[in-house]
Length: 145
Image (cartoon, rainbow, N blue to C red; front, side, top):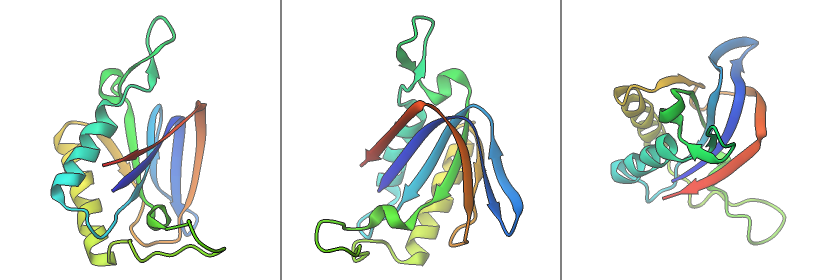
């Protein structure tokens, strides 16, 4: 499972011209699910996302997590993160989870984040989405478990 996180001042996702998810300060998470992923790997990534220290403390050091600042989380499914780009000029998606498996783990991730008390907004699984953000820093990390 892969999660590309971006520290944002604000972010939103639109489908058919309608805003369906929007956050203020926090993290935009692009979530990629692979064939071998399961509930355990999903829990590990959620722990990492919610506790990864990417926000500045009083000394301007990246020492605070999403939970520490009580920031918001926008979760967007991102099928293309599972691409193999090592060979050729076209990505291979052979390691990507099936849509059913990916949606199940995506929904599980979101529900568990809410159980943790995080303020969570989402995209729409398998939709054509337009994502807008103000990357703060910019700060971007690719998290894998």
